[in-house]
Image (cartoon, rainbow, N blue to C red; front, top):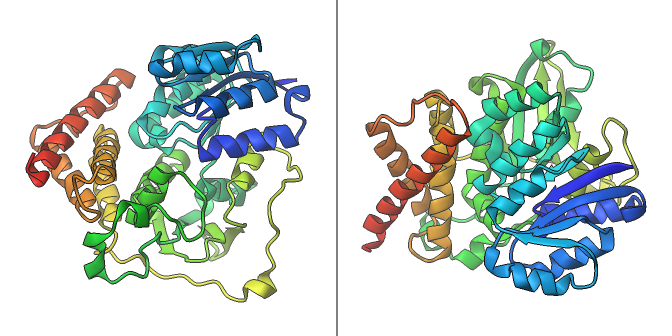
Length: 393
């Protein structure tokens, strides 16, 4: 019986993962070690009871009593806070889903690798902020990292049996988000509610807004470089409104291998869960005759400045990825709180990176998690200063 942990069980990726675990036998087929979540302790407790988890952890210490009450009489341990998340990651598991959103997911995923586990990585920030460290930790312990982003899962599948030396380019697609057809002059007035509605995918608020700004795709470009070791100038982005082609891999002989599937994260999750086999999954089957056509276009650099910033970050190297992600998260928080406008988020990130570069911090090599965490802290401070200046507070 495989031992499984799910970090970020109450988010959209986590909920889909729990659904797939239950569809493939649930507690009778898997030994569930740890489930972690945020403030939705009722959902976390229901998941833990249904799968008979050993421990359920909320990231928020003030939610511990609610979680304990919801688990009363179940025999399932309840815990809360960053230390409890780390302790849960220290419990041996054969397969771990890393789906905590943001930089907060880095440490649990990193610690889970020490068991030689298979880490299903939905937390793209781990590779963006500390890719070389994460990959080295996996190699050190004989662990395997499987991508769960739909784009990187598609790349991974297209490369099965192929030689990376024959790869000329990798193309990842983007829906264009909620505002892909808006006139440019309207973007500055976009509201949080409008940015939180995706035309194709059902995702959490933060990643949906990141999709509208293309910051999500910017992170995925960096993730592609880290995971597959390909030069940044051979990574391309195409806007593909249908969201059916998730990635393409171009080879030296001119062939272009595409991965197609419905806009449903259960495919990528299920592939990682059952790899190297394929299992029956409860996802829609594409009817290409009914679909009729697939469309692609180059992203407008003026509309999506995040893509340019990602390439500048890759050129800078070192701790630039950690700074980029932290500034992006701070800018997103400020947009949600109404402190900056939609189009100001990219400006906040760019100004923050310029400040940090002027201080000589971005080029510092990745040494360990401590300096990644320190850059994350410093970048959030600098981003806060930029936001305060822009908002007049």
